[in-house]
Amino acid sequence: MKKENGIFKIIGSIFTSITCVSCTPQQTQPLLTPPSQENTLSPLYLFQNTEETENTSLRVDGQIPSWLEGEFVRNGPGLIRDNAGETVKSWFDGLAKLYAFTIKHGKVKYTCKFLQSNAYKKLQATGVFDFAGFAQKPKTDQFSMIDFLFDIKNKEIINANVNVAEINNRLVALTEIPLPVEFDKNLNTLGFFDYADSLTKNYSFESAHILKDPETKANWNFLIELGLLDTTYQIYKIPPFSTERQLVASIPVSAISYMHSFCLAGRYFVLIDYPLRAQNPKDIANGFIEAFAWSDKNPAVVYLIDKESGKCQPFLTDPFFAFHYVNGFEKDGKVFVDLIAYPNAEIIYKVNYYPFLKNVGNTLLRLEMDPLKGTIKVTQQTQEHMEFPRLNEALIGKENQYFYAIHNRKGGNGLIKFDHLKTKHRHWYQEGTYANEPIFIPHPQAHGEDDGVVLSIINDLKTKKSFLVILNAKDFKELARVHVPHLIPFGFHGQFFKEN
Ligand SMILES: [Fe+2]
Image (cartoon, rainbow, N blue to C red; front, side, top):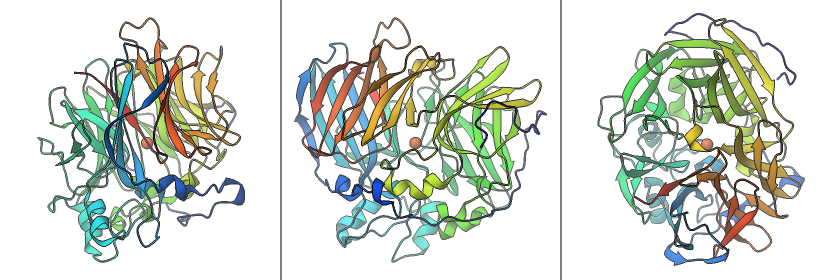
C-alpha cells in the first residue's frame, strides 16, 4: 500500500447504478495463526469469566458528572472455550455477552448476561461448541451451517456478539447475519428482531454497524443478498419510529467482498468493496470466512451512493482492507472518508489473539474523491496505530476535528484523542492495561465538538479485573473510575442510551 501522498489509479468515473467486480483469488490464509512469543499473553484467561450479575452497585472513585445519566451497553465474545477445552476457531465467534453500566446521580449499577442464542443454549445442554459462525462449523449437523447462513425459517437466535443498537426504541444485539436479537434493559434476551418489510431476511449478510443519521434520525445499513441468479449489495434506511427497511440502492456484483462496516459522508453512503472476495458466494455454505480470499492483484472499489437518488459512482484504488471507518464528509465539492486501514486482510486470520497483536500495519487513511472529475486520492494521516475509532455522533457524515480510539502502547493498549488539525493529540494510558473501544457522550448543552466525556472499559492484567474509566473529553483527564468485580473479556462495540 502506498504510504506517501499521491493519486491512485483512477478508473471508475462515470455515474452508474450497475457495477460488476471481477477478480481472481490468489491465496487463502489459514485460520488461527499461532501467536509469536512476544504477543502471547494467554488470552484464554481473559475469557474465563462466566459470571452473570444484575444491578450490582459498583464502587466509584472520583466524581461522575451529574449530567451523565443513562445506560452504557457493550457487546463482545464472552466465552471462547467450551467444557471440553476446545476454543472457538476465531475470536469473532466467542459467545455473545452483554454488559450494562447504568449511571444515575453519580452512582453506577452493573449487569452482565450471556445472550441466549441457540449456540449458547446448545453449549449449556451439551458442554461443547456446536454451531456455525464466522469461522466456526457445526459438529453434529452439517446442514445447520446452511440453515444458519441461509435460512431463518428455524427461528435461529444468532450469536449476535458484535454491536448493540436501538431501532424504534427497541434494543438489539447485532452481528453480520440477520436477524438482530432483541433484549431488554436488564439484558434479558427477548428473541429475534423482525423487520416489517419485504427485503430479504434469508440468504443474506449485513453489517453490525448500523449508523444513525444525526439530522434525519434514520438508521442506515447495507445487506448482501445471495440470490438464485445474482448477488446484490443493497443499501437501506430505517426511518425513525419504524422497523421497515427501505431499499435505497441495489448494486449487482459477481463476487462479494467481506465488508464489516460503511460510513455516511454528507449526501453519500460510502461502501468499500475490499479485494477479500468470495468468487462463488455459494461456497459460503461450506464455511463463511473460508470462502473469501485476498488478492493483491485486484483493486479496492469505493462506492459513493447518493442517499436520495440511489445513484452509485465507483472509484477504484490500490488494495487495502479495513474493519472500521472513522467518518466521512463533503467539503468543497469533494468527498472525504477516514478509516483505519490494513495493507491486506491478514489481520482477520490473526485476530484470535487481538488485542495482543502490535503494530499490524493499521493506519489512518484519508480517501479524497472528486465526483465530478472521477478522481480518488489516498493519503496516510499519521504513524499512530489505532483501532475502534469513535467520534461525537452528532458529526456523523460531517467534518469532525476529533475522534477517539484505542492506541497501541508498549505493554498494553491506551486511549487516544486524535486531532485532525494536529494541534495536540491527547493520550490516556496505564501500564499493563488494555483499553476497549472508547465512546464519546456529549454534554447536554455542549459548547464545542469535544464538550463531553469519554467512556472505556479497561482490562487490568495485574489485578485481573476491569474498570470503567470516565475521561473529560477536552483534556483527557480522568474524572472517575468505576470498579468492576471481575475481568470483562476484551469486546467489540458499545453504545450509550440516554434515559428516556
Ligand atoms: Fe466492528
